Length: 373
Image (cartoon, rainbow, N blue to C red):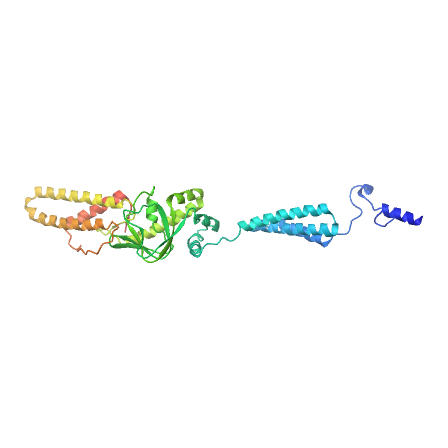
């Protein structure tokens, strides 16, 4: 009988005691009996979950959060399978772990370091990283959908006067290019400088023609953006548009100062950027108007003072010489490279100097693109 009673007691009270464990229903609210702490796996799992919730709101914060969740739910799954022996708890925690593993891999894929080829990597570090352009945004700028990489050998042209259209924007990666107008070198283009920023900025449709020739001085590699593709990208990325406009403006300024060291008007006080399309026609029309005005003024003086006819004849002969000089100046604006022709500019009369000054004033007033030194 004692054996049967013992079996009944064990069946009723599985804790092996003749006294039934107290329950909240016996004493009302609260617990009068506390179980011993759970296994260490359970404690470590919850500690990992707490650490994940403390992740900062930074670049790698989400990655740290989901990584800690993966560890925490993994420990809970092991605890439920080996210690608690509860398949339902194991299943839920294992499912949570799988979800966080997928989220972690997704984040790692998106924040992975973006690498470029050697040339583009140097371009990014030199020009775009100081402007706070992210690698992700720079990748859009140099992707094949918007950008292409070209190569020129020595003496090969990037653009020819009156032939090439201003429908792209180029940037030199390696090598050296020179900008020619007639036989003269206006300035050089070095690494990490825009090749045709003045033409790109001044042209609205890309149908205008280059007013200079741009020739490779050695083997060159460059990257270029078609106008329509670049404008479409900059329309979608306002920050990148601001950065590009800033760099293009800075590059144009440098080219303008480099050009002003080469091209100086005859009055010594006005310098013009002939790389901007349309300046050549303005200069030609300005000189033609000034020459007509000078001839009219000389005719009036001849009618008023007949005795000065011989002196004016000398002046007209000097005007013919200046016409040759002006023709050479117009030829300076074309893109053909021809042998050098030396002309003496030392012989000038008072009427020539006045005509030259008016020419500069007329052309600079019309074009609006000059610098007074």
